[in-house]
Length: 354
Image (cartoon, rainbow, N blue to C red; front, side):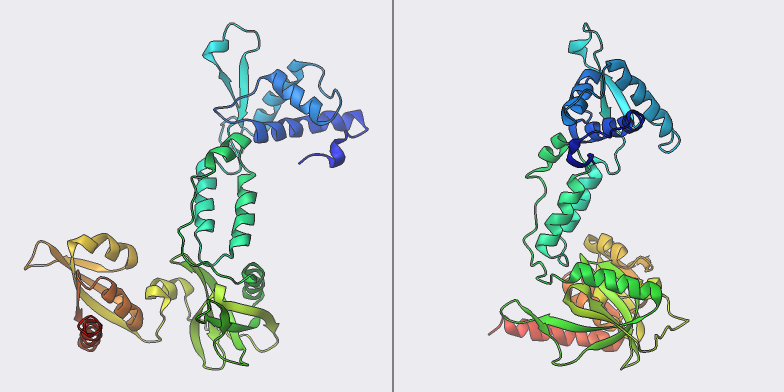
C-alpha cells in the first residue's frame, strides 16, 4: 500500500520507520524466486516510486532486509521472509546477491487453487467471482500473475445470476451468530433461466443454524418455523434476506455436523434409514468419499464386489445416489427402497424403448 499521492511523510524519522514497509511492498509486487532483485534495484524502485532520494546507500537496503527477517523469524518458524539468491552468471560482480519475498500471505499454489474454486463455483455470481479472484492475484508478484493467465479455466456450467449472494451470505452469518430469525424469498429457475419465487407472495421464516458447502454449492441449514422442520436451502436461490423479530428456535439436541454428514445430495428427510449395498470395486472410492461412516465387507460370492452398510442416511438422497451408479451398485436393503429403485429404473427404461 503506497502513501497517498506517492509523497513522502515530511518527518525524517517517519521516513526511516516506513522503509521496511516500502521494501516489502516492492518485493511483493516485483520479485519472486525466479525474479529476485539486487539491493540497488530495490533502492532504485523505492526512490523512483516516491520521486525522491529516500535511500542514499545500498547497504541501508541490506540492513533493513536483515531487520525484517529478524522481526518475522518466530512468526514463520525460523524461515526468512526475504531470502537471498546468487545467480551463477553474476558471481564475478560486486553485490550480486539478489533478494525475493519467499513467505507470502498466500503462496502461488494456494492462489491458483482458490481461484479455480471461486471461478468454478456455481453459487458465486460471475462478476463477483472475478472481482474476488483479482483480489487473490494481488498476493502474487507481477510475474506470477502473468504465469496464471490462461491456466485457470471455468468448467462451463451454469453460474448463478443472483447478485445478492455475497450480501445475503453476510446477513445470514450475522443472524447465525446473533441467533436471530431471518425472512427471505426462495427461488427456482424458469425456462428463461431466470430465478423466480418458488411460492408467490410467500416469505420463508427460518431460524438459521449454519451454512455448509457441498458439491460446489453453499447451503443454509435452518429450522423452518411454520412447519417445525429442519430444512436445507441453496444459498444462491435465496433473495431479499431480512432479519425477523420472531422468536429464534434452537433444538438443543440438533448437531449440524452430524445432520449434514448423513445427508446425501443435501436431501434431509426427517427419518434416517439404514442401507445395505452391493457394489462393484470400480466405485469403491466413490462409496468411501461419500459415506465416510460406512461399514465395508468383502462379497463372499465375488472378488469384484463388496458390501457396504450405511447406518444413518436419507431415503431420497440415497435413491438418487444409487441411480447415479446403477450399473455398479445394487441396493439390497431396505426392501421398500429397493422396490422404489426398481420401479424408477423401469420407468427410465421405458423412455428409451418408445
